[in-house]
Length: 257
Image 1: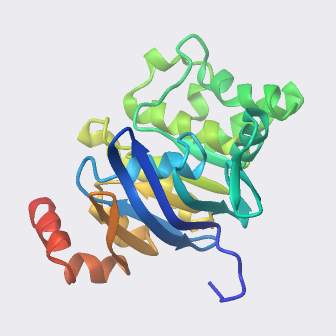
Image 2: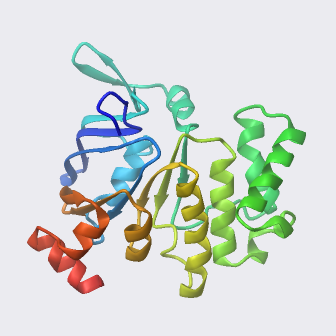
C-alpha cells in the first residue's frame, strides 16, 4: 500500500467495554486495499469483538474506526462523536460482508433464496437479476447443484459456503470472517478455506479471525496476534509464526503449532 492510498480499514485507538470489563484496550491497525489480515489469539482476547466493531454491530467506547476512509457508526462534530441513526449505520454495513462462526442461514429458505434476499429487499435489485447473480455465486463457491436445497440438507461446510455467497451478493468492498471454520468437522474445513483463498486471489480485502495457521501463513499479508484486548504483535505471517518477538506470542504459538 502506498503512503497516499487510503487503507480499507483503519482502527485508531479503539476501546470497547462490556460493563466494567475492558475488552478492547486501544486497538490501532490498518488493512490496505486488497490485503488479507488474519487475527489470532486466545479465546477472550477481543478478536471477535473487534471484528463486530468494524461494521458497528458493537458500539465503540473510545477511538475511531474507518472503512474506505469513512468513519463507521458515528458522525464527528467538533471533537465529539454522535452515533448514527440505525438506518444510516445499516447503509454503511451494506458494503461490509460478514461471515460468522455459525452460518445463520434462514432454515425455511433454500440456498438460493438465502442469497437473493438481501439484494432484493435492501438494494432493491430485480428478482430475476438477483437470481442470476445468486446462481453465479453458488457456482463460484462450488455449489451450483444446491440452489434448491434447504440448510438442513447441507453439510456444515456447504452451509458456510452459502453464507459466503450470501455476503458476496451485496458486492461488499470488505469481507469479515469470524472463525468461519471453527464449527466445522475437520474434513469440511478445506472446502471453506479454498473459497476464501479464491476470494483473496481475486483481490478482496479480508479481515479473518482464525485458528487456521496454514491459511494465515499462505494467504495473509499481515498476521495480528491479540491477547487481553491489545495487539501484542503484528507483521509478516511467516516471520511472526517462525520467529515471534514477544513472549506471549511464543507461548500461544507453542500450544498451537
